[in-house]
Amino acid sequence: MRLLVVDDDSVFREELGSLLEMEGHSVARAASAAQALDVLGDQPVDVVLTDLKMPRMGGLALLGQIVGAHPEVLVVVVTGYATIDTAVEAMHLGAFDYLPKPCRIEKVREVLHRAEQERQFRARPESSGAPGPLLRRWVAREGRRVLRVRSGAPTGSPAVTELDAEEATPVQIQGQVDRLLATPGPVAVLIEQGERLFDGHPREGIERFVSDLVGRMRPRGPLVILFDPTRMTEADARFLRNSLGEPDTDRVLASLCHPIRRAVLRRVAKGPVNFGRLMEATGIEDSPKLAFHVGKLVDEGFIAHVEETYRITPRGRSAVGWLGEMDAVAPQGGSGNAALPHG
Image 1 (cartoon, one colour):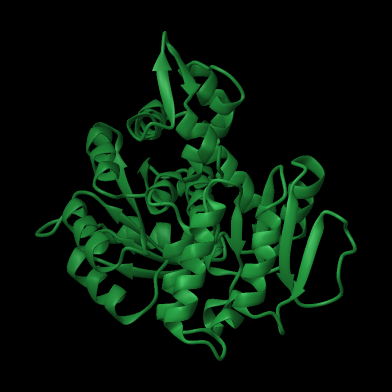
Image 2: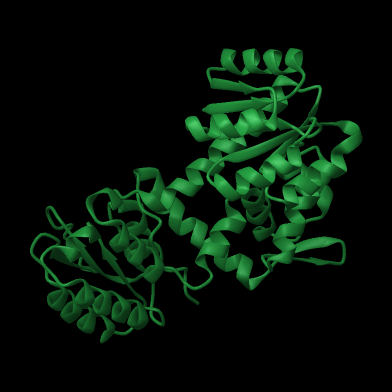
């Protein structure tokens, strides 16, 4: 990854920077918050590791600047054990994680591994690809009848109606959706190469088509439209993302980006569990850090704290299902552009 180490202590800055370079990362260094902002303005950075206590502009002030101007950059604050409360405050202000001084290499690796997981999770909705696992789940496990718009040879499954993505028009797709919705039982619609919808058709007409499709499918089953954002205008890609997401989608995505929260949510989904068991399940030995993420899940309504145990809520159960939808597609390079699970 592309890292930036910020610390006014030259010895610590160079030692940590050299250690990270030995781990295979590209590392820039800054002796102050002002220098760090200059680096961020000049070159791409994935993760900033910054000391909290620095003259003139401290780590918290730098964090605020980065969150406002470079929201895609993850910030890890580095702090002494005596200021862990300040580090937790930094996470409330938008820091991704914190590292206590002295920095043990295994802890640095853990934090950077989680940072890479978060970056990959954030990137999932932007890609498109083969949705085979998702289709198999719909048909084999959930017994859905599926309309699939795709290129290539048909699958031959009696539960799947297929249209050629290169030839199908919105009117033809709409007609097949009518037939699908007229059948009893659970259904689903999968449209691949969604960027083709905009080829040769007025933007307003496609907006009406997609909006109508979303509204009609919402009570009956999932709708997924895969698309390659590099093959369409930014406005068209933004329209598809906004149309396919429930009103809550962006908030859910932001809440579950952090791998610690996803690990906690998935463990709680298996059954009630106390805080000690959560520490074992997640491998997080730092109780203030874990308590912060568990508290976020409680505040967002994904889990509930009942009689010293944490339990999954309906909102949390729905979110776990949504993560399953993403996992079914993403390992093949697939898109997470889908409405949240229904029911």
